Length: 313
Image 1 (cartoon, rainbow, N blue to C red):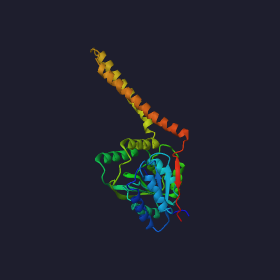
Image 2: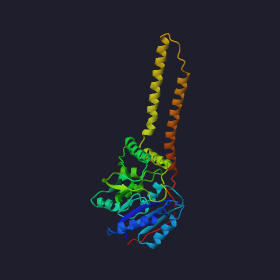
Image 3: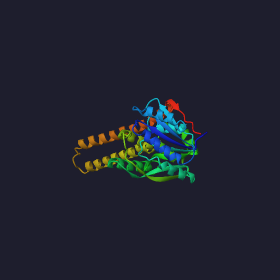
């Protein structure tokens, strides 16, 4: 029998938290009084997480689905795999590190019952975050909203609930460089937010390094905007105007009988500036070309080594 609700959770090196995460999801979902499943996606964990996930499946085969990737494919693809395998009428996505409390899923479901098809959790307060993380996160959302047509809610991550009809459209979107929260906003439907308190990590280490955060931001911008490509036109126009202005000034100076400007330093600076702009634009173009190349190869988004299906009745 198809479960009423699905909870999707990517797992990467969370041996210290995975059993507590399961317990809290179990207690939250049982209170709802309807059928449910928990889809755990092992994203190439190198600790004891895979064994603990298998134990959870053996202990509770009625509810626990375990998907083992063949290697680490990344957080966004682990979410994608979980959504691909989820069978519920409403599917919640949540990280397994317990920074996002599973109890909030009940609040998301309550909004879904009111008729909303996308319910995203909004971080009203954030515990244990550095000022740098908070500052960069704030600017990340502002830049995304400024450069794209997709209005991604401020302080909303991947913790959200999706109606089955929304999920079916997302499953048709198979781009390689994924930004799930942007894709969710792009499909539209009736959306609303639920505020919650985000806790500090209790154990383990954050899986989003600065480089991964930058890559995610790049996926968000380039996946939903062509403005970076238009920068080359704008910068080219600016350089042309700057060159013409410089030529006019030098001509006036010479016609006025003054000695030619010594300007070697200025010329070198301008050459470095123009060369840097050109290389920057080539780099942006290369990012888009690389993404086109990824799509043309038609490789699968992820590779599953093993699936242990639940038996929700």
